[in-house]
Amino acid sequence: MNPVIQQQITGCAIASSAAIAGVSYNKAKTIANSIGIFAEDPALWSKTDYIRKLLKKINIATADHQTDFTSWDELPDCALLAIKWQLINNTPYWHWVVFVREDERHYVLDSKKDLKTNKRTDFGRIKPKWFIAINL
Image 1 (cartoon, helix red, strand yellow):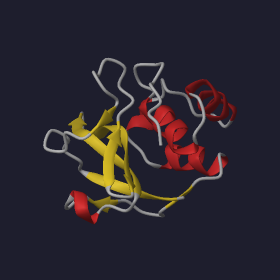
Image 2: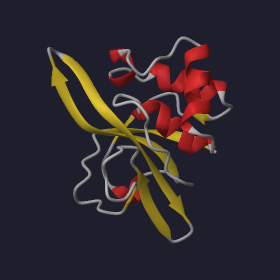
Image 3: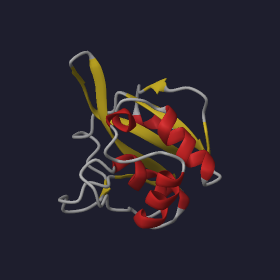
C-alpha cells in the first residue's frame, strides 16, 4: 500500500481512504464530495461515520466499531488509527492514519504533507488512541 498526500489541510480522512482504496486523492475527494463529505467539515475529523461512509462507497468494508489501541502487535493487518487525539470545546478531534502489516513489515501511512516520509516506522512517536479495522 502506498501513501496518498492530503491536498487540503483537513483532508486526512480523504487521503487515508484513498490510500486504502489505491486511488488518487482527487478521485477519493470527488467520491466524497458526491456523497456530501467535505474536508472542510469539522465533523469529518471528530466522527467516524463519515470515513466509514466514504470507504463503503469505494467498496472497502470496516469494522462496525472502534477498538481501543493497546499495542502495535494487536492491530489487524490494516486499520485506520486515530492519532493526535484531543478535546477542543468538549469535542474530540484526531488525525487519521493507516496502519499496514504486509508479510514481515509493518508501517503507518501518514498523509501529512510536510513529513520527510509518509511511510512511517517511528512507532514510538505515534500515539494512537483507538482504531477501526479495515477488511480487505
